[in-house]
Image (cartoon, rainbow, N blue to C red; front, side):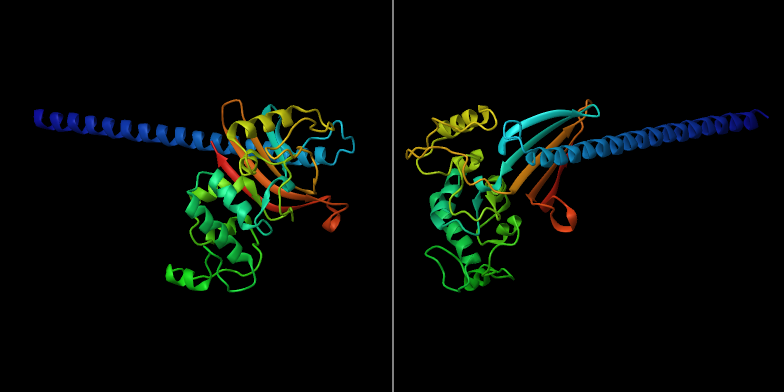
Length: 295
C-alpha cells in the first residue's frame, strides 16, 4: 500500500507538472497571437494613413492657388489623419538627374559627390551611357557586351533607354550601396540634361559644379523657407546662376510616412504624373510605387 501511494503521488506530481506546462504554453500562444494581431492592426492603420498622405499630396499639387499649393521641392508637410501623424515630402522630378539624358560629366559628378572614388565614378558614368546608347561602341571607361561577358554576367547592355530606375543596378560596376546613395537623385521622367536647382534634392545639389556641402545645405534650407509662390530671389549657384524654380514638370516623387502614437510606422514612395482627366478618367498615373519598411 505504501508503494502504491508513493507511485500515485509521483503520478499526481507529473500530471500537475504537465498541466502547468500546457497552461504556460497556451498562455504564450495566446499572448503571441495577441501581439501578432496588434502588429497587423497597427501596420494596416499606418499603411492606410500613408496612402491618405499620398492622396493628400496629389490633391494639393492640383490646387489652382499658387499661394497655398504644396511646393514640390522636398519640404516636409505634416498633418494628422485619424490620430495618426503623417509626414509627406514631394520632389518635382525636373530637379533630379535623368539617367536617360544626362551626360557622363553630370553622372560622374553625381557619383563623386556621393563618395565614389574618382576612377570608379568615371567607369560607372560611362557604363550608364553605354547601357542606354543604341551602339556597341565602348566609351572611354564604359562597358558593352564583351565586358559583361568577361565579368561572367549572363546579360548585356540594353542599348536602349532605361525602363526603370532600379534597372541601373544592372550596370557593370554598380552595387547596392552606391545605388542606395544615388536613388533619390535619379529619374527617368524629366527629359532634362541638367536638373533644375529650384527643385533639386540635396543629393543633386551636391553634384552641381563648384558646390560644397555647406552651400548645398544653405540653398536647400533657404529655398524651403520661402513661402509658396515666392521666387527664390538672392539664391545663387557657385557659377553665379540664380536658383529659380524653372522647368517644373508634371512628374513628382512623393514620400509619405505615417507614424502611430505607439511608434509603429509605414513609409510609401511613389512617382506620379499629373494630367487632365488622365487614363480612364483618372487625374494622375502612377509610374512607380514602392512600399517602405514597417517599424
